[in-house]
Each structure stands twice: as C-alpha cells, then as structure tokens.
Length: 412
Ligand SMILES: [Zn+2]
Image 1 (cartoon, helix red, strand yellow):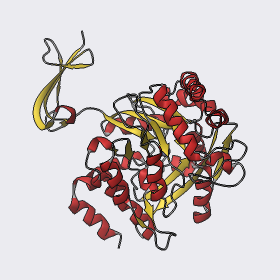
Image 2 (image 1 turned 180 degrees about the vertical axis):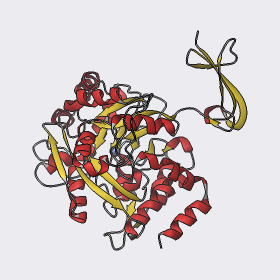
Image 3 (image 1 turned 135 degrees about the horizontal axis):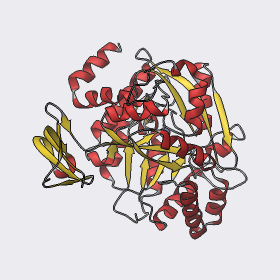
Image 4 (image 1 turned 180 degrees about the horizontal axis):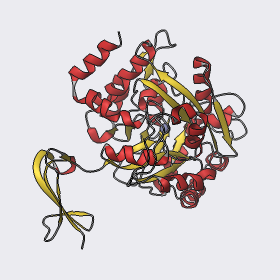
C-alpha cells in the first residue's frame, strides 16, 4: 500500500472550499484519504499544495508542433538545458521539445494538458509524441469539422450517421473529444478563400453554422464527456465578436447529455474584437463575458497574450496566411487530405503595437469579467498567444491590479 503524507503546506482546494489553510494531506494509492498509517513524509513547509493544474487547450504534440520545431531552429536554440541524472535534455522556447514540455509544465504545478488539435490521419504521430512527454497526463482532440465525411453527413441531415461516424473516429484516433477549427474554412482555403458563419462551402453545400450545429447535436447524442470544443470562424478579424455570439446562439436550444455546457469556445480573446479594421479595432470582451454570464450553455478559455516572440500554429490555414501577409516573416502551410490542414508563422507581440496591447487587455478582461470561474479557463492557446511558461505572468496580472497597471505603464 503506497502511502504519502504531505505536511505543513498551505492548501488550496477550490472544489472543497479550502482557501489557503495550513493542513496535512494524506494519500493512499493515489487518492486523498482522511489518515495514513505508515506514509512516506514530504515536508511542504513554505509551499503551496493544490490539485494539479489542468490546461484544457495547448499545442504540445503532433504534425504542426513538430513542423514548428523544424521550421524554427532559432527557437530550438533557446532554453537549452543539458541532460542531468533525472532529466533528459531540454530545448526550445515557444515550441519546446517533448522533454522540456513535461518538465516545464510540471514545474508550474500542472499535471494534465490537452493537445487541442489532432488531425485524425496524424493520430499515431500525435500519440507517439504525447507518450514521449514526461510526467504529464495528456489527451488529444481530433479535428472533425472540415472532414469530408462530416460535411456529407451534415448535409444529409442524418444525425445518427454523424454520431456513428464521430464514435468511430474517437475510437480510431484514441481521441478525447471533438475539435472544430474554423468550420468549412480549411475546405475553402483549398480554393484560396475563407468563410464566415453562413457562407456555403462548395461541393458539400453546407455552412459553418450547419457543421457546428450538426456536430453539437451528434456530440450530445453520443453522450461525449466534453462538449464540442470550438475555434469559431473569422479568428482575429475586427468585428468578429458578433460572429462569436451568434455561434453560441446556434446551440442554445440543444440539451446537453451531461451536466455541462454544450459548446466551449477556445482562445476567445481572438474572437472578442470590435471595430471594422485595425484602425478602429477595439475590445468587445464585455459583450462576450456578458453573454457567458447570462447563459449556461457555453464556456470559454481566454487565449491571453504574452508579449514577446512566439510561433503561431493552427488548423486555420487562411488565418495563418493573413498573419504572414501582415508580418512578411516565414510561413508554411499543410493540407491533410480529406480532413483538415494547418499553417505556421512566427509572430512578435509587441508592447509598442496598439493592436497587440488591446489584445493583451482583452484576454485579461475576459477572465476578470466572467463571474463564475468554472466557466472560464486560463490559456494562451500555447504557443499561439504566447508560450505556456508565461502562465505565471498572466496569473500575477489577474491577481493584482497594481501589476496590471505597471505593465500597462510600460506599454506607453
Ligand atoms: Zn489552439
């Protein structure tokens, strides 16, 4: 019987209402229990003891992450740490190697990370990399939104067929839940175009709205543990907050099969923009947070910006092309036949850029304005809005107005 006693730590356990009390924690066979008889004792004096951190949306393994490493050798030369007796060799900053990914998350107290975009055809590679990441538990969300079968089944209106296909896909890819990225957009990008919520995707005669609604219904029919996990259309476009709100409305009347939301939208900072162009670009975080506060069928993660250099990577190919056009830096694009695609380009979030500073504020506004903490999760959509090792920076901002004010001061 493996027993552990963690003594003298300051314990935080939000689920049980423990907010910073000095307590002993007893563990037997991996579970917290009331008492132990012959434990291994760990002295946590001066330390915080809390449940392991869970990152619900990050890009840590798979085709585009690996391409990002190959694509940015200059990034791989940062953060190099030699092998030690217990650790393997680490390298990389915004696209760290598998070893650095595990160690750096663990150092921040995280124990679980979700790889948020797995092309089904690349599932083997993704799992191979996930297995290579030390310490962390992990899982992956297969991309099902631009899949030709999905679009055909949505078009046919046969929800049983769509749910059966979803079930097979989850089993075949060893996936955890359904990921949707710019629905219809990858297919349109094959023709050099992008699409918004009600545009018709050629050949399949479906709209992004129909794809999302269909997958949400099938997801509930199949009683998946997680709701659909959505990167909505028109990421990063001024004025897109209207599309984001309309996307939530699409699934408002769908009854969840479990006690949870029907839709989770990810890196919502990138989808909470007002204005009509980069000149009159403004925050609409209050509109999005207001919607989340008033409704229970949608949750968000924030996708907060960390100022500095990073590597953007997403299945939203047309968006990466737009970014490349803005920056003129190197860019790569990939099509995964019949199902999805991706793009990668480096990006610098600068405190001297008015747009970047507003983006910086929006992520934090979302976190601070949503009243129920169970409806909002901290993310940077690693590495898109910044590498995950910057989480402590964001946490300090969210906990301290003084810190936010000081940082805002530096940006002027
Ligand atoms: Zn993402």
